[in-house]
Image (cartoon, rainbow, N blue to C red; front, top):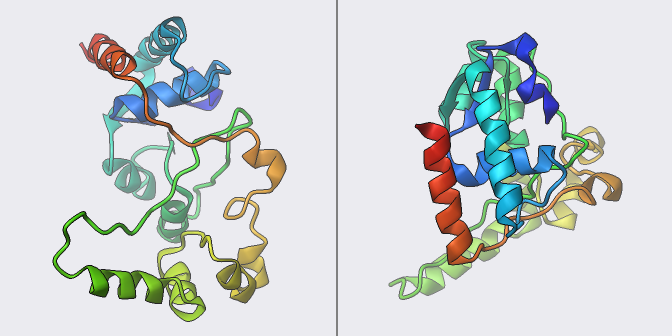
Length: 197
């Protein structure tokens, strides 16, 4: 993650404009868990974000995609499936998983409680979990599939891509976000305000 703090790239770095992702990146850079509940670690992470602030081009969310793809920024954290789309228009881009690890993320299909057409929604999700539909979806949106049958049906160049399907040594450094206690969320909010003002 040190690359995002490298003064050599001043005004060419974009950072997520939300507390959980930005503070999480700083926590990982410091060797801490994304899910720490230690106030001192969270404060230290925000201190490093304050140090980074003068070299940032911007805090943004979906604009990261456009900035990287359009060559208006060179460095930013983003998602691998989106990178595969961006690199088609900007072949100068590269993607890597920092040695400290990153967050494990998923896109999910969910059915709201009380949905009026629950059976239809279940049928759609079941259809998307079929090998044929899952393969088409994977090939269209470029995101990895959790379905082993889809991975086996993919072109070996794709299914063997260590960024799309990282091995255990990489995954050991990564973690999923967990729900944080209310007092820690309040600390995130106050620390984010300290950073942004």
